[in-house]
Length: 402
Image (cartoon, rainbow, N blue to C red; front, side, top):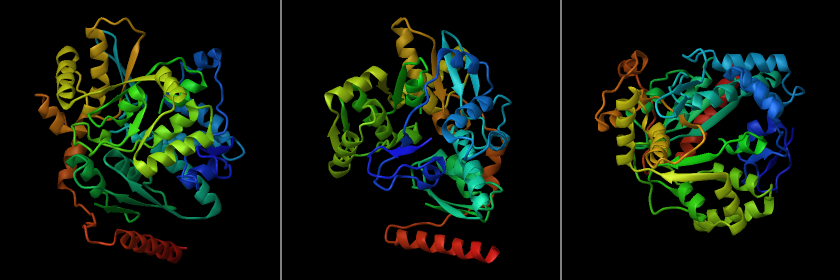
C-alpha cells in the first residue's frame, strides 16, 4: 500500500516511509492512497475477534507482507500488548440505560496511547534492527503521549526518546509517569473517520471540553483558534490545533490535495479559516459534536457513579455527558458506545471535584517515592540548541556502542 500527503506535493511512500517521516515534506500528513473497503461479511467475521486479532487483520491491510511477513507481524503485535493488565486488552463495560463504555486504558500508563504507541515502537524497532540503524524520537505532549512513548520503547536498543513536557498542562501523576523513568534512552524536557469510510456502519459524535475548535468546525465550519487555551479538568483536550482535522478534511473532500492544502495553509497563515459549504456539509453528515463544561464533567462523573458505581475519568465523562443529554431528552437512538481514553486513577483532582473518592492503584502510588529526572527549559534558554546537543550526544553514544 502507498501513502500520500494530504497536501499532494510530496512523493508517495510505503508504510515504512510514512512511519519514519512524521509529517510529510510538504507539511501535510500521510494517508493511505486508497482505503480498503470492508464488506458486511468481513465485518461479521471480525466482530468475534479479540482486540489483538483484530489489530493483526487491520495492520495486514495497511502494511503488506512484503514489508513485514504475517507471522512476524503477529509476533510484533503480541509483544505490543503483552504488558496490558486486562486479558481482553480493550474491555467494553455495559452500564445502565444503554450506556456502553469502551475502556482503552488497560495498558502500562493507564491511557489509550498505549494501544497505538506500543505497536508503533515494535514496528520502528523491527525496521531499525533490519537496517542496523538508530533513531531519536522527539515527543511533544500535554498529557499521556509522553509516558506511553517512554514505556513503549522499554528494552528497545535502537530508539531514544526525548519528551518535551509543557508546564501546567498535565496532572501530577502524568508528570511523574514521565519524570520517574530513569532509563538511559529517555530524556524529558519541561481516530473513527477511517473506519467509517472503510464501511463500518457508525455515526460519530465528537465531544470536547470548553476548548471547542472541533465543535465550532463541525457545527459552523469555523476552523479558527480561540484567543487562548482554557485549562480544564479534561486536560488532554486542552488544545488549539487538532492536527488530525487535516486528515478528516482530506478524506471527506474525496482526497482533494489542492483544496486541503489551500485550507490548511490559510489556517497556518491567519489562524482562522472557514470550510467551503460542500466540505462542511459532508463533515456534518459524517459526525455531530458537543462542547462540555467542567461543571457538566463533574456532574456526569457523579451521576455515573451513583447509577453504576463506575468511576469515569474527566475525558470519558465528556463523552458520557453527551449520552446523558440524549437519554434525558428521550431521544431514540441506536446503541451508543462512549470511548474511555484514560483511567480515572490518573485524575484524582477531577474525581475529588466530582465529590467522589479516588481509587489509586499501587503502581501509581509508588511513583511519589521514585527519583525524578527532568531538565528544565527556562524562558531565556535556547531550546533548539539544548535539543540539538542532546540528540548529538545520543548519536555519539550510539556510535561508541556500535
